[in-house]
Amino acid sequence: MKLIFEKHKEGRRGFSYGASDVVGAKPLAGKFCRATEARLPCLSELDVVRHFTNLSRLNFSVDTNFYPLGSCTMKYNPKFTERIAAFEGFSQLHPLLPQLSGGGMLAQGALEVLYESEKLFAEITGMSAFTLQPLAGAHGELTGVMLIAAYHQDKGLRRKYIIVADSSHGTNPASAAIAGYEVIVVPTGADGYLDLAQYKKHLNNEVAAVMLTCPDTLGIFNPRIKEIADMAHSVGALLYYDGANLNAMLGKCRPGDIGFDLVHINLHKTFGTPHGGGGPGAGPVGVSQRLVEFLPISRVIRRSDATFALDYNYPKSIGYIAPFYGNFGVILKAYAYILALGKDGLIKAAEIAVLNANYCQARLKEYYDLPFDKACMHECVFSASRQAKNGVHALDIAKYLIDQGYHPPTIYFPLIVQEALMIEPTETESKEALDAFIDTMIQIAELAKNNPSAVTQSPLNMPIKRLDEVRAARQPDLRWKP
Amino acid sequence: MNIPKNILYTKDHEWARIEGKVAYIGITDYAAHSLGDITFVQLPKIGELLKQSAYCATVESVKAASDVYVPLSGKVLSVNTQLAAHPELINQSAYEQGYFFSIEFSDAAEKTKLMDAASYRQYVEGLSK
Image (cartoon, rainbow over all chains, first blue to last red; front, top):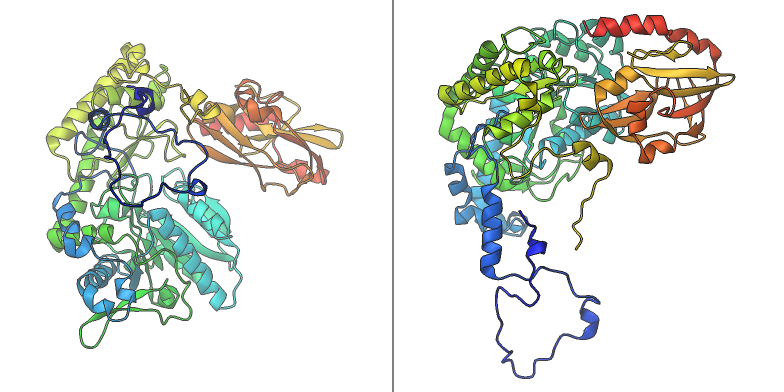
């Protein structure tokens, strides 16, 4: 498909302006004009409509196909939340309104949504309070690490280290490093759980916090998580919960009850809002009681007359971390989702997510190596090592799946599994959808044995065939030139 | 698997080749192979002082980005400028043209914490079981 710039025809226009009929109007003075003409493509309106309509038909999304991209939780985003977020009373509200004198009374509905969302997130996770401001999960992590730093500084402590697991999301060490901490990586033991001996070795009174994902990125729930939490607390370290996998344990167990001091939630994973990139994200951060005073401002409060207002009076707050109150539309969609599902619905969502992943794991483990063979939570991690011996690598399997109409699983993550294939079916897929995908995976395993080149040459049915990813990374060519 | 003798190895798959007071540093063939096609390397600055096992470089491949830790303490003498344009040298020649940098090492006793070729081979074979 041609780029829109390649479809340029000099002089073609989408819209023709009439001559100005404003009496006395002068053309814009030269000093306000750009020195060289902007090189925008010239096309008719129909050219543009066709271009983007055809592009959109190449889109792959959860609305079109199964999307088992592990760790990302590509569940279906119910459409009713879009309708609610589009209500004029919300979508046309000016974000500055509640900060203007008397303006808060004109934004009571929106403030109530924020206030109630905070209460719901706190109840679901077992935390004391939330900030809804972080604009994505990784932003929430950075906010969390800043809260950790504020907590220790307030106590007059200088703590240097943050501990992460080697199976952690890359954003964990990155957030810790950006906030000025040195990162200690604790390995995973042969049993698939955090190596407790190594963990114990690194724990001391210079450790500011321990960041963990639970269930972890292997899709495994660590039965000794409480012990790990208690050990962190015994040296005065805080415990950070990466909420990437919260969807697996909704209503079953709460990070706050385990002893976590901070939690971020990826609303697009757990609460069915669209993913970042396709729309703004949100990564609210919840804290235990001892961290509440450090939360970012502003915070939404409920006054004694049952009205809602913004409150800035938190002298120990880490300040602003985002404009206004976070991505309000995203929080609103998550709020609507939680209310629609209710307590029983959320628990059911977690149960089916776990059931679907275990079903995939059980049906595929005969065909692919399973590095940690135990019941999984919401995702299962296979290794394509067996197939790789015949030259069929995780990347080839991914490309073949694209040809068959599936989004590939996450590959080469977590890093501790060779040739990793991380499958997260989510709760919104039917058994028929799972079976069709599993059958394709079995077919790939057979091909890897008998006819490897059938897999390694894919994709063959896509508009663009196998990309030279190595050359693209080594010699990136990011700008089209005529 | 290429594990030359007469050089020293770490558990994180770095190697050090000692030439007098200078040590040449790089990542092993096993590491390069595990990472796949390497696309980018970030090297330390000349003159930088590094402590044994501290972060010294980053290596990126199509699969992952990894930190590299320096096998011996010392001062960076030179870096392999070839790698900026040709990171594939690490895949092709991990121990020669694909070296990362050289240091003037400060404590010869640290060498005892590193493995020789035989121990490293045994270690790597243990990993792939």
